[in-house]
Length: 76
Image (cartoon, rainbow, N blue to C red):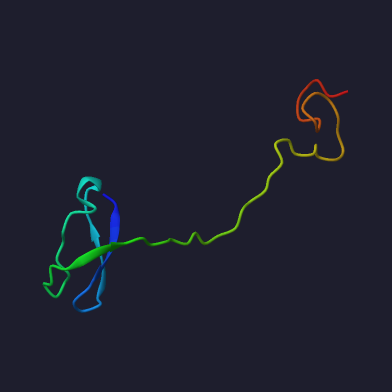
């Protein structure tokens, strides 16, 4: 179930609620009990780094053959 962010107009409280998508814009009370709330568009951050790997790695040094390193019996 998605998490939505809301803001209360009466007390300026921001809060989150897990609700079905069909109820995302339906009225909801703030934790203080005020019914005058609005849904806030929030952004999320993705922390990490991209890992770049080539589709084909270079063959290990010191060999040949069809396996790109002499790992099989057909090495020349």
